[in-house]
Length: 94
Length: 441
Image 1 (tube, rainbow over the protein chains, first blue to last red):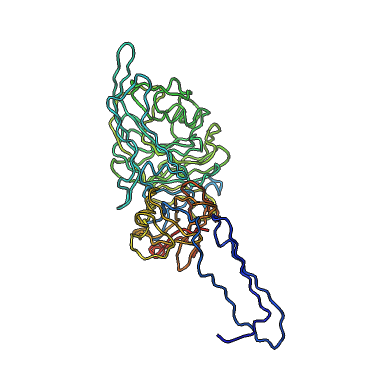
Image 2 (image 1 turned 120 degrees about the vertical axis):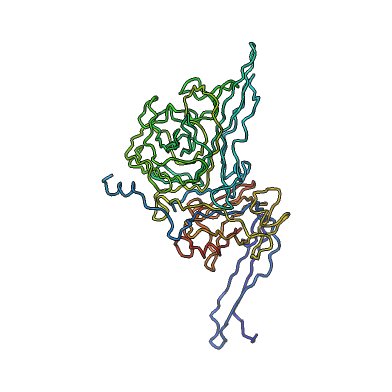
């Protein structure tokens, strides 16, 4: 990676050691401090923060069942005819 | 979002699982007899899950009308009688609604037509069980529909565990010498407000045949408060069409549950002789209201509700689950609290699901999960992966908000209409490729 003058750039990563039952993502904060540096300083082309590992939290939810049901139609047109009752009610002739 | 409940009885496959908190089906058992009473021949099993449903590979709910022999002993000896025990299952909707217009449907099969009494099939009731309507078939197998219109038409005075001392009594006798148990009292089943007139709104023209699956659909239009029009269809053919029924004494206060029945319609003090046994089968239930523009009316006889098992063990998926025992697929589809999978928090687990095969268009998906938090506040969301993107499931129950888990296992549901990627009903290829899962945060 090319050297660059990073004077004027600060990154703070704030980590909280919160209660063990709080999701760890809740304790991560990033502040990027921008300074208006001299004009001859090269621009910063990229800045990235990677969080590689979370220590295993203790609040992983236990799941004992997961399932889905779909309601569908065995014909591609799908669905029955519309309601005669609703049509009549709307037209006021029922 | 207008689809408020679907139930294919494929995922919920036992009475124990159907009674999980969050699903809370309840099933009418045989009567417990009082002092001196006993069964010399018990009624058989009344509620059965996991029996063959309408479609190949599906399962359904089976309600049995059984014979029994009861005995009542006293100081003068004992009396032994033969009788019957009916039953019903109360299936609460995933989302309760205020009174209004609605449509519901289900597939139905009976093993026999009772030639002596009308037999009840289904009722829509409120959160106290007070019924709005009743569907039945007569002694020749023709459908009938009733709207209740009596201040006494409550759950206790309609769905009787045994003979009652009078029509308006909330109690029943518990003697072993009373013949008919678990029946529907007919005195307050009427549209005219009379205790003696329990005439139906109409009688169908298509005769039900035994051992044949049908699609029964019923639509209620609320014209004004306590004034309803009813249309009843059998396999897309109108059987009963009755407009503008004023039922000011109807006791149903909200739309909470469907009651599936296999019970005779008879007088509160019946002393009728033993009847032949029969079985009712129920599958593919839906309940929807008329809000919005999608799923607002009859879905038609080609409709089905199908449970889709997760991918079998070894199927490739991206997921953050770990399992303490058993396989992920077996564990997560079986509502088995003895073996637990853990979802990393924060994390998302997505699973393949079985191809629904014959379904060409999908009107909606019901998601069901049983979960709790481990040690602190945790949110859970249902997730769909379709059309190459992940989508949190949003529907009428949680309105797109994450579900806050509690310290105890509870069963959570969501129903999402339309494919969130296209805002249209799922097509066949989308259903074939769909993946579902959970997100913890």
